[in-house]
Each structure stands twice: as C-alpha cells, then as structure tokens.
Image 1 (cartoon, one colour):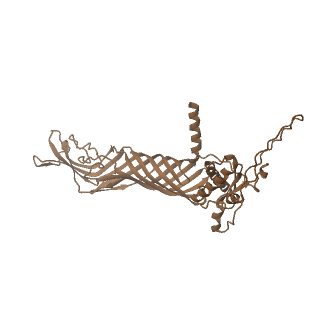
Image 2: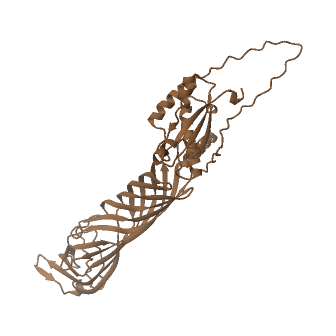
Amino acid sequence: MKIKITLAIFVLFSATIQAQEFNLKINGGPSGILYDSAIGNGKLKSGGGIGLGYTYFLSSHWGIATGIDVMYNQNSFQLNDANTITSYEVDDQTSAFEYRVTPLKYKEDQHFISVAIPLFLQYRTEVASKTQLYFGFGGKILFPGKQTIKASASELQLSGYYPDLNLLVDDLPSHGFGKVSNWQDKTTISLKPLFLLSAETGLTFKIKEKTQLYTGVYIDYGWSDLVKDTPDLSIVAYDPSGLDNIQSNGTIGNKKMIQESRYLSAGLQLKLGFSLAKDKQQPVQQKAEILPQKQVIAPIPEPPVQKQVVETAPLKKELTIEERSYIEKEPLAFQEIGSTNLTPELAVRLDQIAKILNSNKDTELTITGYTCDIGSEARNLEIGMQRAQEVADYLKNKGIESDRMHLFSKGESEPLVTNALAENKPLNRRVKLKIIDQLSRGF
C-alpha cells in the first residue's frame, strides 16, 4: 500500500510540475504607515523588500500565487507646535494630577521590518512574441515587527495641574516638572498583524526557455490600524525623580494625536520567474508525411500431409465518401495566437467525428498541427504538437483508442495560405485530420 501511495504522489507531482513556477522578487518605493492626524503630519519614506514566490498555473492565462515577502518600512511624524498633550498621572505622594507636555519641534523617525504571506489570483495574456501583460490581485497577511522610534524635541515643557488645589506646577525639577532642552530618546512599540489589500501589474519578458522577467508596479494597503488604542498615554513618561531621564512613549497609539495609522506600500517591482516544466522532445519537421507501417507477419506453412480449412476474415467496414469528406475536408481552426484550447464549435465537430470513428473501428488517422509564422520555428513546432495532442485527447475521451491516432507537427512550414497578409495568419493556425488507408498501413 505504501508503494502505491508513493507512486501515486510521484505521478501527481510529475503531472503538475509542468504548471509550476518559482520566482525571486525585489521591490522598492514609499513604504510605511499612512497617518491621519489633526495636530501633526506624517510622511512615508522609501522602503523596499525581497520575496520568494510560487505560482501554480491553472491554465495558460490564470494562476494562483503565494510565497513570503520581507519588507523594510520607515516613516517620520512631526507634531505641530503650540499643542499641549495631557494625561492623568499619580505623583510620588500618591496625588492625582493632570500631566501636561508642551513640545517644541517634536519629531519622530520610525522604522520596522515586516513579513507578509500573499495569496494572489494572477492573469496574463500575450501581447507580443515573447512578451505578456500580467495582473495580480488579492491580499496579504502582514506580520510587523516592533516599530523603533527615535524621538526628539528642541524643548519640552512638563507641567502638572492639581485640580483639587487649582494649582499648576511647572518649575519643580526634583519632582519631574520643568523645561527640558534638546531632548531625545529611543523606544519601541508593538504593532498588530493585519490584512492587506494588494494588487500588481506589468509586463513579462521571456529571456530564456524557462526564465521570465517580470517588471511592473505594486500597491499594498492596510485594512485596519497597526496599533492598539492608547488614548491616555502621553508622548513622554512622567518621572517623579527628576528631568534627567525623560523617556519617550511615542505618538502612534494615542487617538488624541493620531486618528488613523494604516499601512501603505507602493512602488516598482522586479521578479525573476523559473519554470519547472520538463523539457519536451521537439517534433521533427517533416518534408513529406510518412505514414506508420505495421509489421507483416509471414504465415506459417501448412504441413504437406494435412489439409486445413482456412477461415476467411470478415470484411472490414469502409468509410463512406461522405464520412471521409467530413473528417478530412475542413481543418480544425485555432485562430487565437498561441492557443491550444478547443472552441465549442470545434468540440461539436469532433463529437461527430468521434461517432464516425467509433462506427469504423479499423479506421486510423493522422492528426497534424500547424501554426502561422509568428514566433520561433522551434516554438511553433511545439505549439503545433500541443494542438494535435489537444484534439487527440478529446477524441480519446470519446472512446477512440490512442493507437489509432498518429500525431505530427509541421509548425509554420506548410501554410494553408500565405502569411504575408495579417488576415491570413489565423487561417494557418489549424489541425488537419487525414484518414490512413489500409493499403498504406501494409494490409
């Protein structure tokens, strides 16, 4: 049982690896916290990140992408002058008072590192021979590290108002009240995980057979605030022992100062994608169609003494002229560039062809794929074979045995009409069916 399970996993992996891609990512631009404040002003600074991604392509256009991103984010925030920040504290004599902090030229430089797990739905479509346009949209779960804050002010006026006594104390340094000049301190603030709305778009360029270069832009926007509310926390901590060690609390969590703190990151992005598809054996371009020959086994001579009655094999059913014409007359059209998908119209015709072949069990046919002259010769041979395989797979699902179908690709080598005119090119993207006569098979 374990061997069967292992083989099944291996077969599934081998089948799906064709549609997988890993990529390395680097991006940069304004990245940090977007502040909304009535008494201050926050500014985003340049940040950037790196990432490792994985994409599973559901089709030639659609895929699902995930991975892990690491970002460096930084901000500045500056309070307007002539604002007093208040909070309620208890002094060293256990008396409650209103702590008032009036800063001058107060500023914070902030930064933090974050890790994000993205989940994207990606769409891409070809716009040139080796160029595609891509879009990605979805979300990310952001896990921010602690925010490091470097706070400074040219002056802090620290005062205490005792409402019971109607007393304002603003010059008692030994108890933490007075004026501090050229103050600065450093602290850290814990940030909350949150959900980001994300989008990206750009162009991809095929630089090698299995390597794609993605160039474009991206944006990530936070769904909620990055920090818990701390409305009663002042920008600096009250120290009843004096003014020599005034510690910063930061501004980000205080709703009196900052009403919103949303994450925002946007800028330019580069990705290098590595496909895991296995190398396919390129079909050999044929100068003339060579039909497969079946081996003829020489009959064993009868013994001279005995006479045996040889039964005559029943006559094989032959296709009618109408049935042959229906199969061979019109090629199957694949008019979209690079497409190997069957249209509903082709499916209807193949259903009828399958009925004819199921009624004529001895009939075999060749399935040959063609392209126009857009793209390299090797790529066109590959697409031609993929189109032939798509037709064969459809007929097989309708009950036609694989050994009755013989696949070929001629790529761009035998156009139905000249490729010199743009309107002719769709007519050359086709698959041709041809009945193999019994005589040509060696019967």
